[in-house]
Length: 308
Image 1 (cartoon, one colour):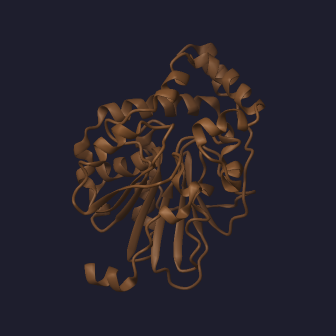
Image 2 (image 1 turned 120 degrees about the horizontal axis):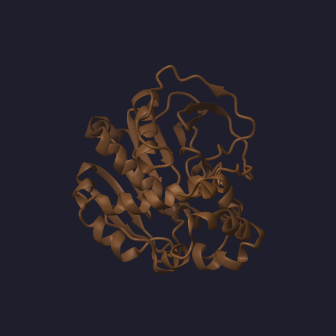
């Protein structure tokens, strides 16, 4: 990459979206994990991993039970969407050997989180889009951590998956040096100009979370690195990676203008028998934001005890 392009790309992007958060925030390398406060002993731990150009608020209204320990991962070089967080020191943090802004790096953050912060007997990992790939990669790196874990992979980036033709058509002509200009152009446009095409039918929560997506990262270089790594990761990994899964659900939307639905389904069919592939009636890539009713209910503790 040319030095002139890098200078443009590393210019900081100011954060544009935060929400109130009650809990602990740990810096892990160039990312973070936020542990929401809960009342009493947690019955479930849910670790949620956001997608490309999203933030952890994507999941906060989907898991609001007081007995659920919700742990929200912020991917490397993304803004943490909480106002003025006071970071706590993680004495268990270890250096990460992978390049920043990659699926591999963020998977290493997830592995440190699973190894050190889970309190409940039942663990669910919920990843949306790129976040689904982060979960699969984490299982590849440290499979021993996930023998009992349940997964929800929502419209996930899959091994051998592809972007939707519309996204591919948008990305192909954009060179590295054009990204700062492209982002400024998109942020100056009303989201209605492109939202319906890529985001599907809008609602209040979607408008809140998706209207400033291109301000989710700390700089434009992270956007470029994410895109290049997403393409490389999906091409490099085969569907045998799905054999790391043990139980859970893969959610495929009825309409998806971000990822190619046919390639997602083709890969998902290689999941083990304990993983249910559910084709939802959701009308966009953002299934949880269309309706959280598509998210499988957390199992009762009786079922968890019987399966243990």
